[in-house]
Amino acid sequence: MPTQNMSLIKTARDIRHPTWRVGDVHGQYSYTNPHADLYRYLSQWSDMESFLNVGYSRPWQYHLHTSSHRRLINRLADGLLALHTVSPHATDRRLLDIAAGRGGAAIHASQRYGLEVVGLDITPYNAYRATANARQQKVSRQVYFNMGSADRLPLADNSFALAWSIESPAHFADKPAFLKEVSRILKPGGVFTMADLLVVDEVALAHPQIYHEFLQMWDVPYLETFASYGQAMAEAGLELRRSEIVTRYNLDILNQDCQLFLRLSQPKWLYNTYKWYLYWAKGANLDNVYQHVLASHRALRLGMIDYGLFWAVKP
Image 1 (cartoon, helix red, strand yellow):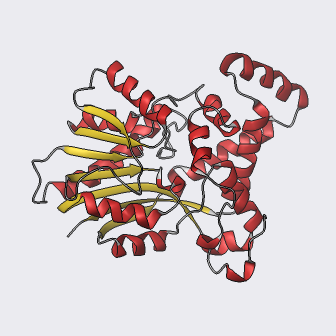
Image 2 (cartoon, one colour):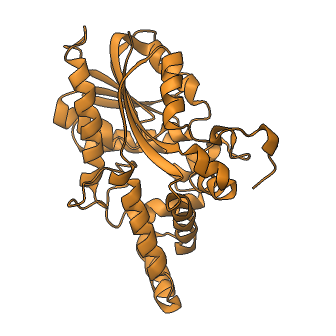
């Protein structure tokens, strides 16, 4: 692991990706970073130009598909709106999507739930792609996107009754600051939900090199734990109403796919043939995909990474 003072590391939250910068995130989502080849690879099965979240699937449901992304969004939205219906702003249908990615979640929220959505993202390509997707889906009057940073939202205090962020906070350099911004822009009685990757303290502390490789491959500065997110929400002035770990419905399935990928990569003739095909079909370098999958599998098989859902209200 790159130089860090191990005597100062007491929790996995203290283990940081030392060379991380926000430009790495831009590169991953703008196809200028080698880590973006994973999305080119996954685009063979799912709409990665719209949805970037891991997804949610029961054992009998096909996972590597756009429907899996939508199931996760539905789970978050159903909980969000259940709290919203008993809030003082039940007739307010405006939703803020923080770090909206390529707009798939925002567009789905409009089409399925009739919400008007404002999406913000710090990566120019994502904002451009999301805007084009909304126009293509003919919802650009109900869903629109702007540039904006999660730790300094360009919005007035108490301006939204609904807000969410789906799997993007992992990339934020200061997650408690982001939650304070959420609390600031929410109206009293407003509702917030989020999904994010979580680190399991004891496992990451026992395997810091593997954890660092995971952070590096995903261009993540650090991860919060399930407990630390709850604490950070409370300190931000948000009242946590419900939370759950759903790792078995997404990351465990992802790890099974990683295992299959690595197994099929063992025959050199098959790997080289597919490498040529993937570059021809998607412009992706299979070597980059392999390194990404390998680092993910090493962390996931140890139970190092969890996946949490949270629903909170601003009192």
